[in-house]
Length: 200
Picture 1 (tube, rainbow, N blue to C red):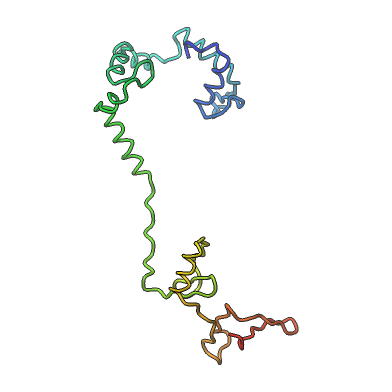
Picture 2: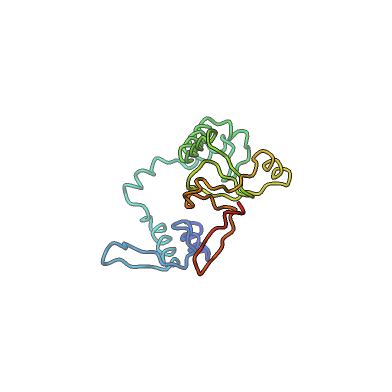
């Protein structure tokens, strides 16, 4: 910021670093206060540059925390780890550094913890499997999940041979409501819906 405080693109960079924005939205100053205000990002840029120039950007407590930071020692340590002027110049050195290895291990552990566990699929091995036309049903009762899949001609033929097609039958001839209607044609007589069970 000290070097780029007057450059044209710095306001957009600040906005992007702050909230991922493009710099077209305003920066809210104390939004929870009745005295709050909003500033365009170029004004934010100028104010930060002014505070840095006057050495008032950090509070005294923040400055005290920075007093023991030796930028030369930091650059030397980074160079020993394979980083010079912000660029990785020796990836092998970087990868073999114990500190970097620990950071990478921590990052992988955190990523693994954040990855949601996949639910265990239900065991359907003891459920009946039926096929009516292109519809395969696993289990009995009302469907809970329906999915569409695409299979090759060979896979489709293997499915047809493995799972024979089931015809629609009357479960109980006295109780027409128990009819499995999947293949029965629908007939309308005077607006009332009937199923022609003679063709099942």
